[in-house]
Image 1 (cartoon, rainbow, N blue to C red):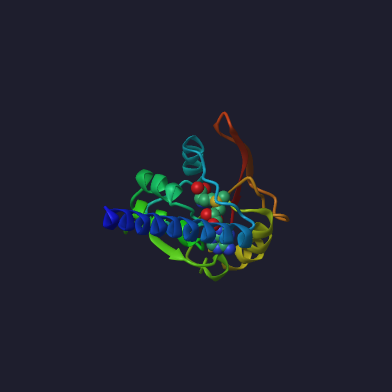
Image 2 (image 1 turned 90 degrees about the horizontal axis):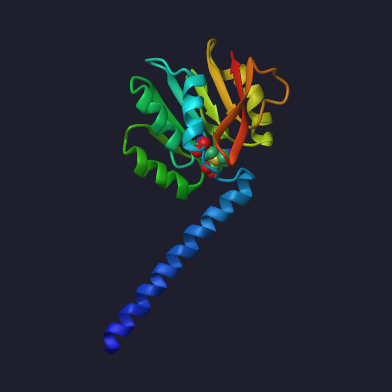
Length: 181
Ligand SMILES: C[S@@+](CC[C@H](N)C(=O)[O-])C[C@H]1O[C@@H](n2cnc3c(N)ncnc32)[C@H](O)[C@@H]1O
């Protein structure tokens, strides 16, 4: 009986410690990024996929790929492109790895370190600061013909080639900004 009680207590402590570690890591990245981990609703993903227009052989980057759901949806539309997700939050990066199981390259690291020179399609659902940082990089690094689709946050200085409302669900309405380079 005592052994059972002790084992139960140890298990409970381990589970609690794991929970605190995971939530702590998640909170740390949320504060550091100032870009919360918010997922794109499934309904909106269809529109994003359509506007990105992934072609065979494209190299598609999801900058801040979260749990990989957008890459998974894009890949189910076209599996003949190469998909690369960049995510600095260990917790959600782990979820993406689990979801995609080797079907995409998932870089656990900073967007600032990602090599955009090969990216022919870029998806971003980030924040205003990050879009401002990315704008000069897109100009310099993206190959001619590349397309960027951003949810909610436009590039501060470049006029989008197209802008539209993105209605994914009753509770989520955002704008979509499309840039052709
Ligand atoms: C709004 S969520 C979008 C997630 C996913 N793209 C989607 O649409 O479902 C933004 C993601 O970007 C990640 N992120 C924010 N800043 C980052 C950075 N500097 N480097 C890498 N990832 C970052 C966050 O951790 C978060 O998972």
